[in-house]
Image (cartoon, rainbow, N blue to C red; front, side, top):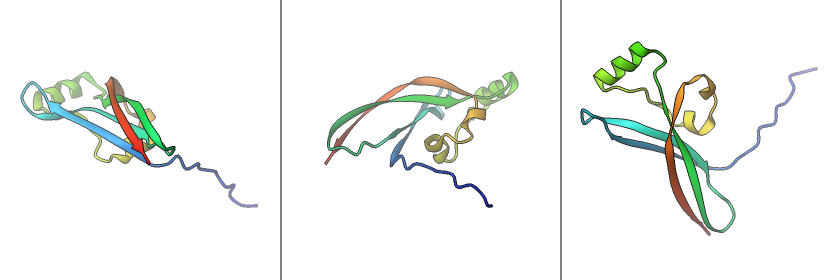
Amino acid sequence: PGTPLTHTSFAGPQIVVSVYGPDFFGNDVVRGYGAVHVPFTPGRHTRTIPMFVPESTSRLQQFTSWFTGRRPEFTDPRVVAQGEGREVTRVRSQGFVTISFNVV
C-alpha cells in the first residue's frame, strides 16, 4: 500500500502574453492575458490566443479599482500558463492575439 502515482503529461513550452495599455486616466492597466503552446513540428505555424482579464468580484471593488486606477492583475505569469486555481478567479474574455512561429 502507498500513495497512488499520478501521471502528469508534459505539454511542452508555452508563451505567456500580457498586454497592457492606458486607461481613461493614462495609467497602464492590463488589457489581457493569454498562453499558447509552442509547436514542435518544423514549419510556419499561426496560433490565435484567446485573451482574458481578471475582474473584481463585487461592485464596490469594481468602483474602487476604477477610481484608483488599480485594476486586478496576476502577479505571477504561471497562473496564466498552468490554469491551476483559475477556475475560482472571475475573468472576462478580452479579444484575441494572433502569433506566428517559424520552427526549424
